[in-house]
Image (cartoon, rainbow, N blue to C red; front, side, top):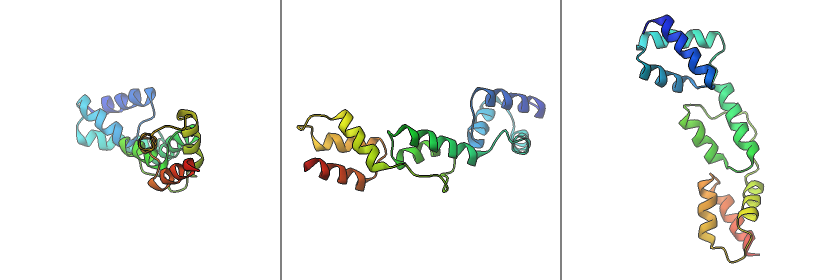
Length: 140
């Protein structure tokens, strides 16, 4: 695949979904593009503002934070899987409020096992301190 074909393939991939530089590199490698063409195309796409990992990272972080169902650890894990940096300048979600709302919605009965609640919140990326506070508050 020559440089022009690599560029056209990159645009087709970006037309489907916004991709990070790392994601796009992997996809182009799988399509058979060589490293030199990929490097040149990446530089061109950055100059043309088709690739901006920090902007994409902010948007992805805000998307998951706005859902109110995930903690900071879950969101940063999603960013890492997409080869994106963790933005320092975004507002972190209110983990305590989100966790409390999820527990109230999902576990309405008083006889729910604390370990089950803890696992549920841990899977959603809430910190240990938030989980401990929620479980202690639930005892009251």
